[in-house]
Length: 332
Image (tube, rainbow, N blue to C red; front, side, top):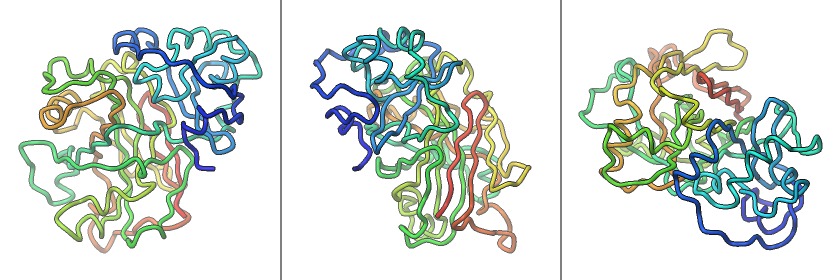
């Protein structure tokens, strides 16, 4: 069975859900969502091919569906997508996190994770957003952010895999990035208030086939294949990240002790607020939109050609960002 939120809502019992139709409630406002979720960290659990909502707590990950059933809560949010758009009984989340019985607690080290979000309205990406990365790629700075997109089929998960044989490429490269999840939509958003539109932040990976990226003038063939957007494991609400320009971004390959990428988001050419303001001039942002903010220097493509050892099946990638944890995936 394909892992989807739809399967879960249809009554698949792998996570302890009740196999009955959920009542329909009006979506909560972005302000209500922000108030109900402040200080919380979410994840997506996968059980028997079904993805569903988890909350990270000091006791472990709370399986929301199991805890809600035990506590007699009928309509909890079932997925991170629900939380972000205000679907379900958001007011129950704090009680679920605080009163979850032992049977609803999961070990973060042994659970299986799903992609952090299931069906974002848009996945937007910024390229060449660090001066040192721009220089290593021998590119010229543009006045506006370089914008491209990925698709929902690109989404991947913590401890997932990327099957390199699925695409006709060979020059595979890593790109760890800070990701914003939009909570409050809008068009032509002022930069001065742009960060208030962010629901939360996560680690993302803009995995790339460089030979496909530069085969044509458009980057999409090298950036948007299936599985090329690992995301997770945590979605940290924006109130816990008061300054997204003060986070260290690192990438490790296999068991190498030294990161290949290691730079602060303070070095972005276009900061997070500027990115939101710019993008919202072109397309209306909506709750659930995903924005990748660009990668720091240190990529394989930035090395001299005689030092370019491309990623291959069997390699393992570890991405870390301050306060957001660690995203791991492997190549097959």
